[in-house]
Image (cartoon, one colour):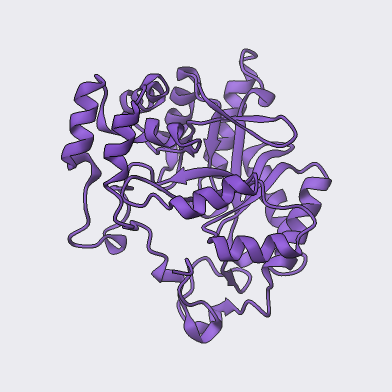
Length: 315
């Protein structure tokens, strides 16, 4: 299994289990299936509303005495309603309580958008805090404190553009260690990836398989299905692999982690085996030609120009 290495030498598996949209007993079983299959990287977030279930599964696994807390890299994320002064640490403490953990391996600012406290999803402009009311740097200072206090071993961001990263780095005491972004062959983001590598910021790809199971309201009527792309199917046949395995392997070949979500044991195991898929330079060149800057998660749902949130990805 390829790993990503942090500046202090800590490592993280390049293939993790994503849990967005997963819940209940199905998720609990999926966590166990994944850990027993060899996964040592689990990704969640406060907003996924599944930290409690994941915590139960992990506690039961650790209680068996064969796999220990320090063996599993666990990421969670700060929701948009806890960016203001004094809100980050309590939000992290709540996540830790639900996950039944003493620390997180990685804690991320989920989005560069702030809501009023208690707002899960904004319904009107008044539900937002402007960037002036809740500056990202002030949120980040609280993230730095969480790391300094040992509540999170590593801290980072998610959905940050190069512009937003540069602004944050210019003001921060500690730079973000991770940027979790949407990445796949249709959205390759080479410039952002190069910038992150140049700044020693690791990158994790979310929706690496296209997030086909997200709610209908988030889907475009004509959106592409990566499982149907001829080039990917050809490469999969040539490598005796599945298309999802090719997609995951592509991320790993680019030096990124990927967190495909599945609750089906067969798919969980198959995704993990992508670690054994070796893509050739010719394969990578073919996939490079697929880029069309297509976003499955376009961020429009958080754009509120009257509150200072326009063109979320700065493009």
